[in-house]
Length: 412
Ligand SMILES: Cc1cc2nc3c(=O)[nH]c(=O)nc-3n(C[C@H](O)[C@H](O)[C@H](O)COP(=O)(O)OP(=O)(O)OC[C@H]3O[C@@H](n4cnc5c(N)ncnc54)[C@H](O)[C@@H]3O)c2cc1C
Image (cartoon, rainbow, N blue to C red):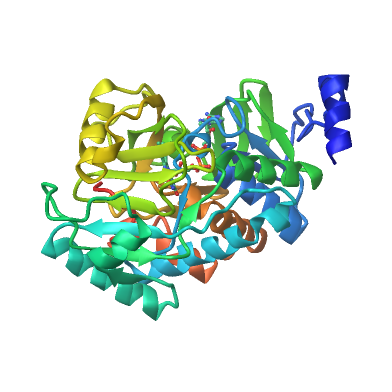
């Protein structure tokens, strides 16, 4: 392996094998997936691998992973609140556990444990509730108290000095972080190798519908005839749905994050505080990856702001005062497609052939594998798998919302 790498270094870029191929746009595909993020790519991969359907195009207006899939803070967990949510995300954690082997690509999944801190009686009560629901579904999750928290995060101040002292935490050992780019690239390569066409810099500009049935997609590179379109565009999903006249109960909001200079490893778990509105983890390179809640307005802007880092830093320093001299390396933002019940919208819609895998808000990266697998099953069988049935579009018409208060670890 090392000789191959050396040879590649000296031979220049020519020697590198591309991860996926460039194809001419065909004028017809059996399935068109809009969005080259983890959801669209995973669906394409499982369609080809599990169902032998590879006449599939993934259309991406920029480059693979340029949306939320390349901008997230990579937290994976299944300690949700609703039984529907816990079962669903638990299947994703299990798929993540085997993903490096599945894709033959190291996705660096590090199950280092996840702490959701409680600073009030009310949040401690919710943590106990979540622990009960988790345990009933067989998910490893329990409430622990400051002395145990101190052992897991020795540099965190669990005394009664902070403005909101830590009273307890929901501890979820299988939770952790992953290398997000590797997941996206692994699925893209896997789909490409099975015959799927990945088209970057191909923007969908319109969708043709005849007698309430999808017939074609218009793109910046030409028209494609198809009977099946999957909208996997997260922050842009309402714009795509609007092309078939469908209104989604989704608001797009920016979510910001930032990363510090690398530090000697000192934090082995993911730490989240809903009350202080921040979370952080230490990457394998030693950087602290930090985030907070969505911006308090709807927007398609991916700009980042000084007020975000000022607020975040103040809150982080409440619990980690020793980080006061640490410098920020960079900050960024992505778009989040928020639903009223903090659960996704998956499956069929009133427009025949127009499917959705959207509503991923601030929490959709962890769901990439299970959504891809189950949406592929839905497309192949034309039946909604039980696991994703609670997240159907028509729940908003029938008033069957899945109030997922455990969706974002920080406040919504
Ligand atoms: C800062 C931040 C931190 C986050 N942290 C976490 C976390 O720790 N854990 C977690 O689980 N989730 C997290 N998320 C949420 C997660 O990133 C998203 O829910 C997830 O990546 C959505 O994936 P996707 O494949 O559905 O969409 P995306 O990755 O956003 O892909 C959609 C793609 O559609 C493309 N597109 C849009 N319009 C068109 C068009 N007209 N034609 C063609 N292509 C189009 C876009 O260019 C984009 O690449 C975070 C998000 C952000 C922004």
